[in-house]
Amino acid sequence: MNTAWSVVAQAGFWGWLVTTIGFILTAFPHRGFFRSGTALRWGVPMLLFYALWSVGMFKA
Image (tube, rainbow, N blue to C red):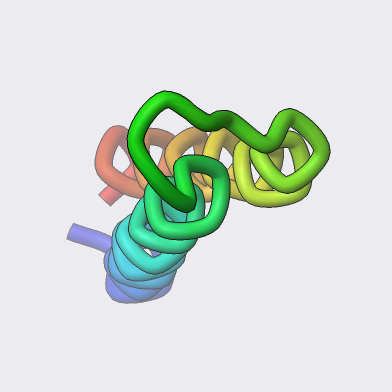
């Protein structure tokens, strides 16, 4: 197991978790309403952190 990749996996997981919560809370401010611009600002980093987490898990 490589320690550096384990750290990358941890950073990816926590980044994904925080951005997913941010996405849910800001893109859907109330029932029946969706903010597409805000969703894009939170969604792109969410996908990047998910990819980072996945790569870290495979390499660790």
